[in-house]
Image 1 (cartoon, helix red, strand yellow):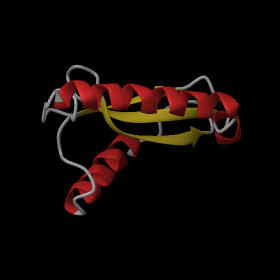
Image 2 (cartoon, rainbow, N blue to C red):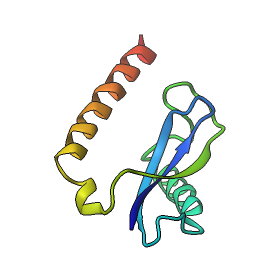
Image 3 (cartoon, helix red, strand yellow):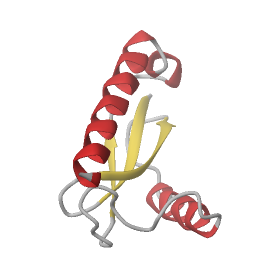
Length: 101
């Protein structure tokens, strides 16, 4: 088993939205990239997010499905995941400040 990450990326590889899932054999599950695009459309329709990269403004978004180093969602949700979330939030705040200045 392997946790996989589907990200919707702009050409500069900024992540607009992401989804994780467990793959029994570690291989991509057909349709997961489509599910991320569906979720993005639902969030845009609900006006929860904008349909473009908040860092560079690109409207070209491409899904990427890749394996993570985690064997399960339980492992992924451990203390390392909390540290990664904190680091991601820090970089997002820096990017917003740079964009807004």
